[in-house]
Image (tube, rainbow, N blue to C red; front, side, top):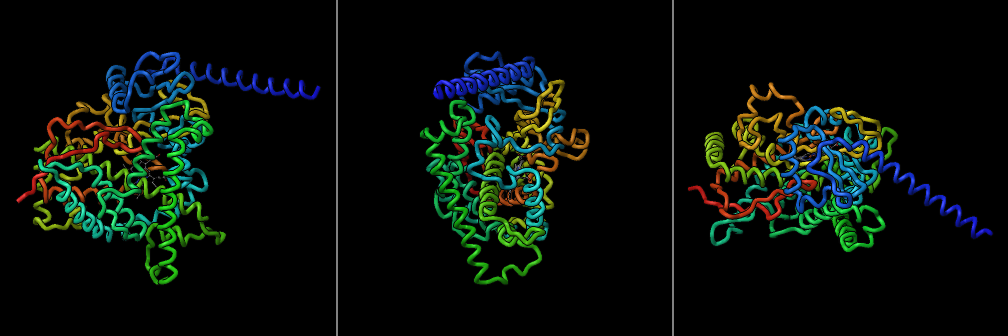
Length: 498
Ligand code: HEM
């Protein structure tokens, strides 16, 4: 009797869940019915059978944007999961201006898949916790903190340039991306964490390798609906690899925190300065009620900044170097400027950083064509209307920064590399949300100035020492993941300048 009662209750719950799921599915189909997409949706694969790499997917989407001028589109990940994306300033600005949280709550929100790695640090947190930590950490990017970092950028560049020289093959070619990753990791560790780990002395560093692999695993999981459930993922091979790698990166972050805590205990006078650097702010932070950040909160911020602070900048610098090789005439212009303002000295100063207009234009155009953070995402807490499409609360929406920065209706001749697009006279004619490599609005990138300064120093120093060209027949294939990497790395031909 009890058994049959329990069975009936269980059957009712299962039936309810199935009906609820089917109704939700029908609702999603209805919402996306007339939305532009890269092609007809397959009943099982959705759009997944139309591309085998993120580069192919982005290419198909670009073609679709050329054809339709769409401001919003949908990609079905299998039969049940529509991924809605805004891709034009008109639609994206509604989200940039809002305080909608990041898509951390459920799949297929892209940030859901990296939550167990980065924790609820500044990138993924929302509401009161985010407000508190953003307020707390903003002073770490004050002018007075950033200015002395220029010395570190130059010292990092010294080792980076030596590494290039040492890693040249017999044809004078070098794979640059991995060396840049080490350089930007070194910068981040030294500037924000007062950590001198000699990162660049190795050909690769396990942390940089782990981050690269984690980003790949997150992307693969995103596009494999079978692995969306936590349970299925934890049983899979890649789920176990994910767990091992996140354990390792968390341990790396904990070591950095412990080492700084020890050093501050031994010599508290290190804190007697007007502006504390990033890690010291976290360690000494006190809320209004005297509470400190928990160990878990500190670690989440360290994990977040280690990743956001080095991987993004590595992408920006590596792709910028690629464009130097691709456009020799632009390289020459930037080189002339850098040579003149430095008098060929091996040092790029704070004054130089703020007085290199040609380099600044070049870097902006490079980041337009290869946006280091190609996609970000939000979870709607209220309904939004994007270009006539009503999207209900609860759905995740991707913001395609790369497509916004290249949208054919916003950027004439979008495939042409033309740094003059960023002259004041042209900028003032454009929508302020048309160029958003560092996002926009309240959740914009806190490290923008830091990243731009570092980029300028590394690029200027690279140009002063080497002439760069592309390697014929090498395939430069962008990978549209959390950060825009290059599938085969970025191999460049290098000639020492006399
Ligand atoms: C070229 C380099 C960089 C690019 C293109 C970039 C881009 C971005 C973008 C697009 C966002 C918005 C993410 C979102 O809304 O989901 C963001 C946020 C963020 N970035 Fe960067 N970033 C760069 C460098 C850095 C650096 C060097 C740091 C740290 C030193 C940093 C720390 C952060 C943090 C903590 C956030 C979250 C901010 C918040 O939500 O309050 N980024 N970045």
